[in-house]
Image 1 (cartoon, rainbow, N blue to C red):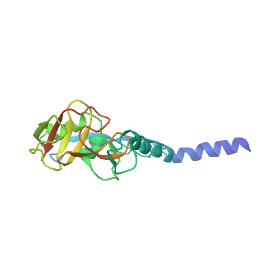
Image 2: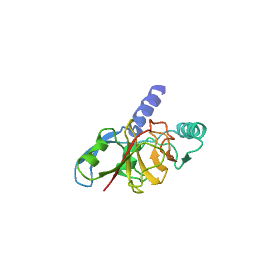
Image 3: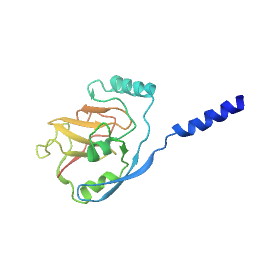
Image 4: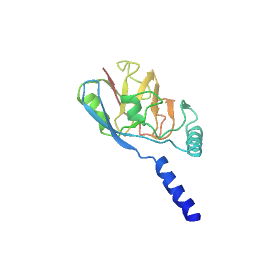
Length: 170
């Protein structure tokens, strides 16, 4: 009987096992981009822990979503701003968005205030770290912090090295 229960549990577990997979999509100019499509979410305990982490260590940033492993900063900034996004985009895949001309360099900045030449909605590439964001104000960015939540923050108030930025727009 126990052997049958163990076998049933194991077989039943196979049906609920999750595995991320490689997926492709395109820049606005049609260049293929490869990401990892997530098939499962963090546990409730992991989400709570990560939400608490940003509340403790970044109290001046605004948490806009719960923590999630379904998408990251590059995917959020360059591919889709939807919370239903399930694509994790690893560097240097995001470079394809500006290398193919879909987005053009509008400004470079080195301070906490973004240059006027960088329009609201510009995609931001952190020069000295592997991070992307979206400019949403004169001194405000919105970005997803890895598996941590999506945050509204000043340019240099993140877990990332943030003393240089490139701003891109169509």
